[in-house]
Amino acid sequence: MSKETLTRFVDEQFHVDLHFPAFLHYCQQANIAVTVLSDGFDFYIDRIFEKFKIDVPYRANTLRIVDCSLQAQFPYHSADCGDCGNCKLSFAQQVKQKGTKIIYIGDGHSDKCVSAFADVVFAKGILAEHCVKKGIPHYTFETFADVLAVCKDGLFAEITR
Ligand SMILES: [Zn+2]
Image (cartoon, rainbow, N blue to C red; front, side, top):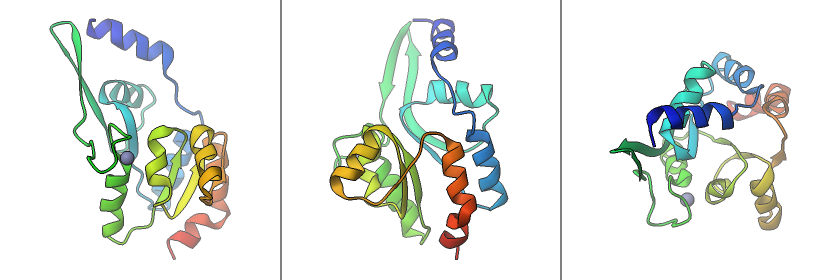
């Protein structure tokens, strides 16, 4: 695989929630730090962030093209968890050690282990099913417009108090 082929694939297949930039803007104004955690790969996150002019830190697995083949690496793998490539729980634990509260927004398998640990959870898809099954309190959402509405409606004020 060449870099060009991979880039074209990313451009065609990957999209960002249209409301995500507005959400980020609101977080910046409210002085709420945002980190993107992905059990995907840096290669397409870099590309997507560049394309949609998104400027936040992220943590993901790494993908390198070596002699026309793809090599994946999982620097944030956790031996405790076993479910995730990039264990989001270990990142959340580091954040919480500093006394920071966590609003967690997710939709997939790799969001499960961290969901019971976060202070507030927004969930859809597989994560929403998981939260229902485990009795984890959560807001459901479809797009970041839903998340933003709850944040504006007093959640940020409450969590930063
Ligand atoms: Zn995990």
